[in-house]
Length: 633
Image 1 (cartoon, one colour):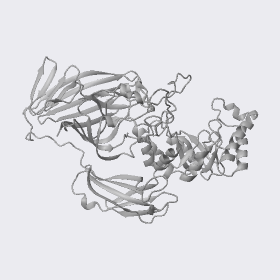
Image 2 (spheres, rainbow, N blue to C red):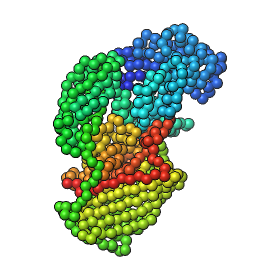
Image 3 (cartoon, rainbow, N blue to C red):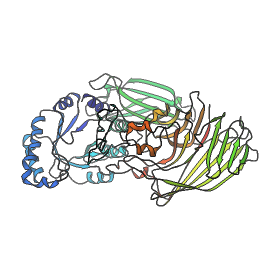
Image 4 (cartoon, one colour):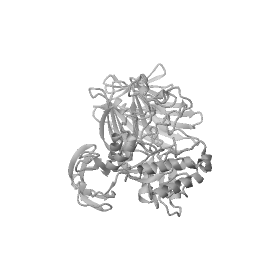
């Protein structure tokens, strides 16, 4: 019980709706002590037969449940709202409930199913457009989202867009409650404690399968990337860079002065530390702003990437976190390097002539003392890539189109594609220091449209390979990603990348993931979803290295940026294995690397709206990504 509350407080959550019944009495004492707002909800729901709500014969049952809740909990200051129940429609029994509660207590009363009877307007899972429309209605009531941002599986996309409106533009909005806190997976007798089961796992019928796993945390209360996104979006201090030497802090707490906090900032050049400093913040009462001098302009000496990351932390320990706990953070790009790949000149060091020949009228081989590459001209695939005699690919599986992803918000159990090679051509440069290979493909699917894909490789005598991937989506396109998937040698377990991290992130859930230089392993990039699903994405990546224990392997450098995932699992197999704890049964030795040109946002469509338009892949549209593959040194 205390652990839940501490996690709440440490991740900037300040309100609990006890859906859909009052909680254990001990919890309210803890809510009082630690400081949380509570919407106390009566144990009243007739979801399957809402006619009961307007049947006077049931009035006593409705009223009794609300009255007993109020009488039990009315002396707890943490309770700021009463809720008459959930999803029961409207009728005379809600009116009777309201009147009975009002006779006992004067705190505001909530009921989403009958807003005209309640003291506030309430809504479940609206789109942003619907939320804005309701907020702007000429009603003299607060407006509350009693459920939104359905957190089932790899989810909680679009949260920033909701709060940009709620926090800064709304007329009547007072906040909302994410559905919900914890995945309600269960242990099974005789099975290990770290295995979690759900609907149907016990032979139970009927069931809702995994629709009980909607939490921001896992059953064992593991902190997830989606919880960290919530912490970032909900933080009570906002930041604005005035210039390279000043940051403005806005204290959006209602009762805390910024003197309770320290500010730490860290300036990095291409991911490497240049300067960091920590100091106490000046007097700044709630609602006010202060400009803080953090001189960095003299340190921006070239055209490299310079990012500054600010963190505000507790100066002293309190009852829910130790001193040093970070309550708010932000990152700003002060300068960004040009997003281009430098041309490889003919006289570049190590740019040796290449031998280019066709074997068995099928295999195009390109090699010198720096690199060995081979293409299968029958399917257009890169099937060999060796540096220093070490094979980078696993079982000849170079880049191929991948449009597959399955998450609770966007399941695709049967999204199968067929790829046809339309053209394969190659040309060696006159000086023999590069070979250009052009391939054209048509990718088709049943019911999800098609893609025209052109891959252009340039193999250089230095061993570098430039790859440009062009995609054109059809008018009926409906796949969740445009990606190139490669199987890499099992030896390349060590991952270093410069992009957003260290946590999993996606186009519409990346506020808590800052640009930096990160080191991990392929095993370390897996997530712990109770229902196994696509996982491990990283966005806005400029450089990626996968190497063995001795540092040998390959490096991928983006012309602009790409997203990637590196796993020991195939996404289709992940979805079909069902249970997260069974991933060990399908773990592959090789590394499945996906380089995404674009991937659809996560959204919240397991119960609510899908991704915002800016996070969708457009139909009948051209997309492009380009990168360089080279030996890691």
